[in-house]
Image (cartoon, rainbow, N blue to C red; front, side, top):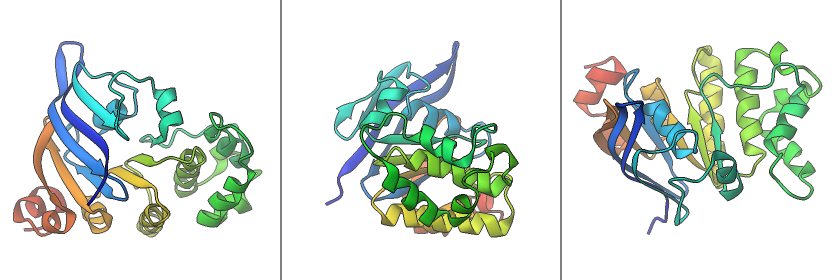
Length: 237
């Protein structure tokens, strides 16, 4: 039986008086890759920011690892085992690769030097460029650095927002392979992705958002073969 790691129940998030998310319900079980799909403006990024503590819900409940985190600040969620890779990577451009990774471990106690070896094994190119400034890396390398920085916190749950955005197809394939590798190492993944076809190929389950609430939910394989999803999000009929 699957163990529920994250539960979002009846959540509403507002920007001023305008609801961006309304009566949102979904869950993520330990060991899964769950993807959130939907058009621009559907509420996907807002959902990740709400889960990671960057937006506080107006109403509803968010539970992580059996703890109510609805009003928990973002920095404390890192301590509880949650890491967020935001859209646009947001690396520190004037810091080296190594310094960026060190920032990912700033909440950790004790020695974390072994974690560098793990990151460089996942992303060999980062090991080769460890003394290079983040801002001089390619887009794909910056995305790898953003993911590596998040993994330095040793998360139970990794939130990924549009990891393929603006990348070449070959790099996108590599990023998705790495996401499956991360899951195989015991990290649960909640993935927001415009590339619905790629996301559903690696995910266990998916939720399709529209206007801030769940329109469809199913196993990823079922969504991949659903004519409604094909027409609306996969560009096929």
